[in-house]
Length: 286
Image (cartoon, rainbow, N blue to C red; front, side, top):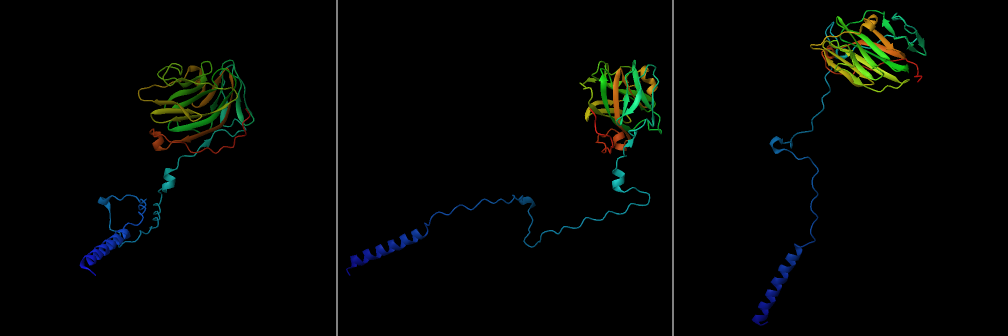
């Protein structure tokens, strides 16, 4: 073969080989590797886990038995239970207050009914002694008929007394009477609300060392810091002391009355929900 043909053949062979090599590296493009979903590790806190095994869950240690006379943790944290103040059948532990011109007080369908008097009708507590501070009282109240307060809860705070009025001064004022000699419609605990006749309302009052708080249907309506304040009651309801419930020119119903003492934390003002009530009240007759 002439020299020129040999050279031309070699060049063509080399070119063909290079082309095949290039084609071998130009397969269809690969799909990108999927992004990892593992959490990103902070390299500053990364540990060498090549020679470690997953940690073994240790069983929870068994609590040590309390020393003799010491309360178990669950007991120490338990809140004092509610004490029932009304058996749903009689006025045991209560008496009708002789205001003069008061309406009749009777038990009807598992509730205490205080009939309209010329002015006030009410009941006062005569049961076993209760603390005068660091306690909570709750009950349901209903204005059956009338246009004024259906709950005037007279209560003690240490050596003083006060009342929590619901629906006063024409039917809508809520607050404490009295604070610094001012009634609920005059002091800063007063507010206004609309109450429907025949509807039950859950009343709750908490009296601590230096505060008074009150709720209606779980709505906080009074939160008074007692520092620098003086409490008193209207002279007209003085006969309801130390603990009583009154109504004014109104027919009122009461049921499900309960009382409990506060924990040390609650007495100091730490807010917390009360323990649940265990009630045996009859179905509401609204």
